[in-house]
Length: 232
Figure 1 (cartoon, helix red, strand yellow):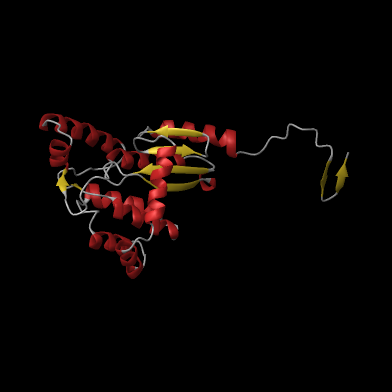
Figure 2 (figure 1 turned 45 degrees about the vertical axis):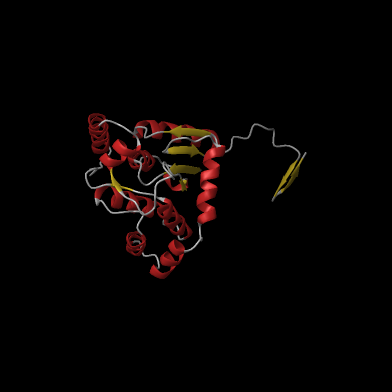
């Protein structure tokens, strides 16, 4: 069973949704039959790659929110994070363009390390306050996951994986995805937002039962052949 997840590094609900989803999946008997594919999405592609802002600066200057409203929003997300086992550090989090981070995600996907890369990027951004738009920072993250430093440098300095990232963006548009996290469950159901783990567990179980479980043969079994011969 395949689960596709559109996410952006600077989205706190994506981190919360990831934790809740993984907690739900861990408790299901068919967890080893589930393939998770991370997809790229940019909440604000207009951000200048060389410009960084604090969370407060971004929402006040870019979005025009009053400081009191931003503090209230942050407080609510902090509590949701704690419920999901995440200690957000919004005072250190730096808002910047995440396109390079998405390129690195696709490099990690090449080596089946996308899950680890997604987690590492979230930690770097939300916990450690690192600039996930900075090439040196991203190369360091790649090295920490056992990826080749030279290959990571090449990817970040070239157009490699640009098409793959843009393809994810296009798929999101085709699915009319306007916000993240966004989950597509085996091509049958979609889930948007950082839902509770219980919701994910029920949705995954239902999807598995309907699309990925053992096939129930509703035919008579006639007019077919197997290793022992044919039946008519």
